[in-house]
Image 1 (cartoon, rainbow, N blue to C red):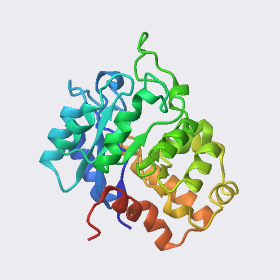
Image 2 (cartoon, one colour):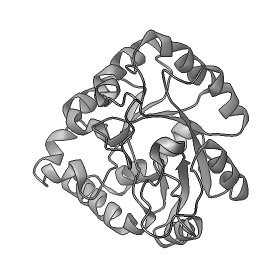
Image 3 (cartoon, rainbow, N blue to C red):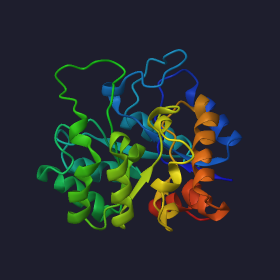
Image 4 (cartoon, rainbow, N blue to C red):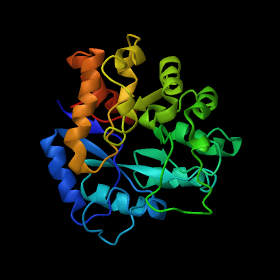
Length: 271
């Protein structure tokens, strides 16, 4: 079954893109997102030799340009720091979507609304980090607070911008119930089930998942994302496949999660 990975970070590791392309071929991942958050996540997921680079928007744009048929970029915006004009800049550079993380203020702060207004106007899907974070290196003074990125703050954004394509990363982590309610009630909110192995998903078993995704159309509101080093793709896919099997989604419903929902959200060709 072919897949589109909408949540993958550019890892600052020697030979990483070649490793990633090989893993994508092995696990039938036809397209993969790349996210670069710059110095604030320096060294994220590095397992081998660091390549001396900084994974940022510039680095992502370069690699996407080299492999436009395999990769698409999610432009990193730090809310409370970056101006709304950054949305126009990233769109003009060919980024397919936006990634919000380490926000300096609450996601639903009104000063962020011009960013969301532009994203909505451009039709850019927006991946919002949710959950407790622990950066690769401590950064005192950066005012890192996961409260700012709690899933409940996305409700006000969805109300104000009903055509904004919102994706809740990690299904809210500590706010799973909130995230599930949001994706069930709001047509423009989706979620991925990404995270460490097993990470937040380790507190659930096969009896829990059917209770969480209980409504008939749930398979239309979830997209596949990994958020791991490509060496962990096998474990990530096995874990997510176990969830889908527990819920009882058939082949077409699983295809919606693995590929078709992302195809619609990002406007990819269905071929």
